[in-house]
Image 1 (spheres, rainbow, N blue to C red):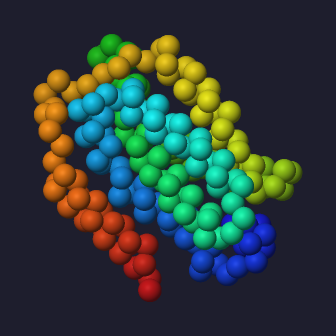
Image 2 (cartoon, rainbow, N blue to C red):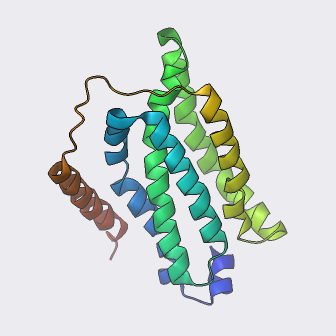
Length: 189
């Protein structure tokens, strides 16, 4: 963050929205995509979300202003909100029921590992290559994920899910999650 603050010649309050914008959109869109995936296909939505995450990572890396960076980070958070909830049913579909507890344990440990190692790895990339590298590193990983998902993961649905989309419910949930998350982000103020 300090490197980007210097690069964009901006203050920390504005720069904090690079992180806050991502977190806000991630939280707002975390529940709705999982419901849509249950209805219309988890693999399909996962691939769309992953492709969207790759594109937004590139756009973040080439941003030339704080406003553009915040906008692309909001879109990146949205794409992560599409991908993350779909990973649980996709992962459990790959393994027999007796392995589900282990798979969910591994699934839960990965974000902890990322949170613990991310700042250090991000610092190394920023110092050795530049702040843009923390976004560009997502591109080959995302491409690998897509290349592995297409042949190895089968499409799955929730057979009990109704095909009708509850637009009022989605809107209500999005507004509620936005208000809650925005309130938590600004709690100190």
